[in-house]
Amino acid sequence: MIRENYIPFNKEFLLEQQTTCFSENEKAASFKKLFDIIEHYYHYEAFTLNRNLKQHYAAFDPDLSQRERKSYSSKSNFQVFKETLLTVLEQSNYHRLDQKTVEKSFKNSDLIGLKLSIDFNAFKDYEFYVRGHHKAKESVRKYYFWKKEIEIEYYDRVMIYLNYNEADYLDTKKVRLGKMPIDPGTIALKIFKRVPKNDIETIFPNAVPKMSLKDKMLLWVPGIFGGVSLLSAKVIPALLNMYEAYQTGETIDLLNSKTSLNQGLIALGILAAYCFRQYNNFINKKIKYSKILSDSLYFKNLGNNSGAFYSLLNSSEEEILKETILAYFFLYKTPHLTAVELDNQIESWFKTHLNTELDFDVSDALLKLKNIGLGIENNGKWEVAALDQSLIIIDVLWDSVFDYNQQ
Image (cartoon, rainbow, N blue to C red; front, side, top):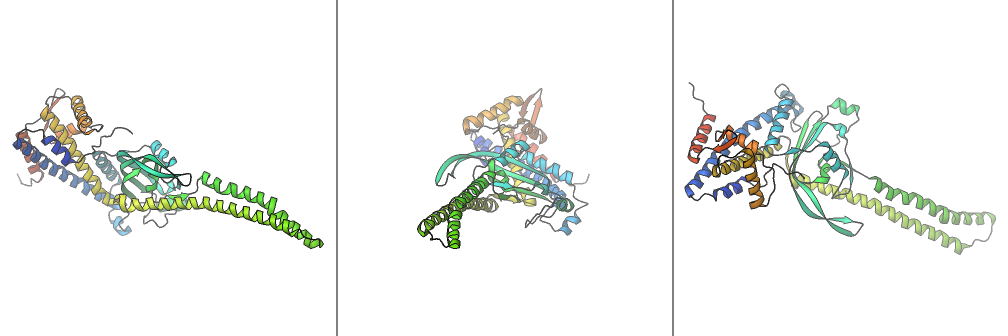
């Protein structure tokens, strides 16, 4: 896995880590007050983004009725919605999975070992956005009763974007949406936590379990060849001998005929039991898949459709504030740093103090400081305003947000 921009610690923890470095309690209190105001300012920006997202998504929201969506047809703009969504995802430090990674995930399976069939004709477009990752030990069943402990790689957060085709196209391709409460031409958004990297296809709403080639071979090859062999070698000859003896009036060697017939029937019973066990293995995998699906719906799902915006925007606010806290503090402690020097200091601090490797987005953090008036660049060197001055700058910025006075 690549190093990510995502910072896997909450803002309260990071703020506390920085304030402990202040020797004076008064400065620590001012530092907390400064970021309390900054947090409110970012929350206001997130509110504006949320309003924009809701307006331009309404015409594509599957949770609204057709009549409601139609009323927004002239107010919603797909391009504006998609651009705003990508902005929020970028601020939240999500990154898009490329098609090669997605296809590789579809081919592999860590937990269920089940082939899933997905009708991609249902979608104009589908995309995965992920953030954070970790590894965990899981026990999986191998070779009947033997359990093996393997290491599974998980994405901490996954958002799936599904843009459904129009009804005419679905009819042409004979796509059935089934019992899914999705109307053609809508866009579904879903956010999940703790999704296995190699089982990411399980969060598709139209994923249907199918027998893999291996499952079919294990079921049908022994069944057909073994059944034909037993019938031709044991059962059919015994029945033919008994029938011929009956037709000619000859004495039937009943003992040998019964023995041969019973042996053939017993062998067929054993073969049938084997085939049933193989089919039952497939059924058990389907049950396991259903369990994973129900866990995703009830325990791992963090938001659907317009409800996903709140999860994304909360993450966006948090990531923006964390980046601002870190960039401000390290420049406050050591002014006149280049972007590269600041980046190295912050990443080194995470590795040394928190045993965490990340790719800190220093350019984005410096841009945020500059936009709110706290970051100052001079010949490639960066510094921040003094703490007292920073409080004044942020107070003026916050007051100007709701300045409705007429000049």
